[in-house]
Length: 440
Image (tube, rainbow, N blue to C red; front, top):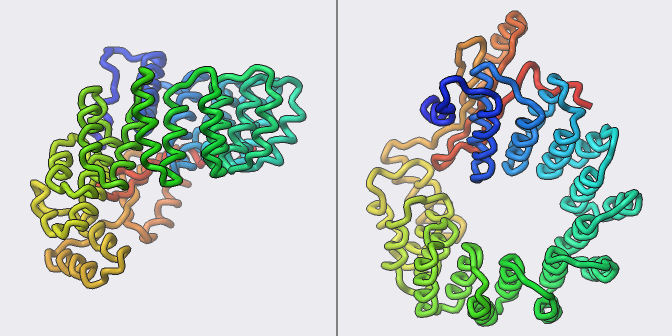
């Protein structure tokens, strides 16, 4: 962790809050919310506190993480202690964060405390209800809004669309005097969710302009209803109109090839992805591995896997499934430069168990046990006044002692809990000064 943390320290000899805010923002923009949280921890170590620019960025980072509620609550507590909880940008960020982690009750409490509610605050609360499926509450709030903009209508359409309420979505759509591309995309999504692919295609043809989201929504709709040839035809049409497919588009049409068993078409799409610098995407890599395996070319599948610079859990699952499909799963032992980890042994055992092949599942568990490998237990590390205490999952032996030390010291406690699962940190929990009691 120390080595990782050092990489987030600014190069400037005397870093200031503005430099830290820039670093934190860069991590968020680059899709690295955990890096943003680590940078904030280092910022505090250098003696700097967050301001009305830092908190919105951090809250956005938390909103993009799953199972990190404690970090969000802790940050909310810090906004109160530093006096920034009344700042309009911070309040809106809190609303969006609670919406992202589906904590609607807390989002409502934040909204009620907003003294001057602008259109952004109203839309944030509206989106919180809509994204969690509480469309009755969303419509009540929509009707109470003193003014509405196009985003307000689009949020309601998108909310109905996500849950397949086609008639309600269409009513809102028809009542919009001026529609933008988001309005059209949301309505197309509503029809694909409801299974009305024909009407979705009619809207697709009718809309004045399209973006990559439009094409991807339509292709995903075809895939969902097993219209694989139509998905591939639409991909060809997309290229013919000089629209630029992205990594999600390519991953989708590779899935169509996998279901059709079309190795020739899959190879053509692979070449297209390489020529347009999309092949390095982990989504495309995983789809290529799956496509080649299902189309009968496990050799090509392995080649893609070996050449991939990044291998996440989905990439590993794809190659393991491909090897199992072709009866070569035992060759996984030679697919790595080092011995298999406990997580990979468990992955194989669970893969066979999920297919009902209990003997094979037992075989991999026995191999793991015979190799003397024990499944790594989750652990927590607690820092109290510069000293670190480590607990394994379920261990409570030092709880009383630590509580007593904390009470005597009367100082801040920072907890960083890390659970090791397939070489990934699942969560980092940062709790300051007694948590977040008294926020509401």
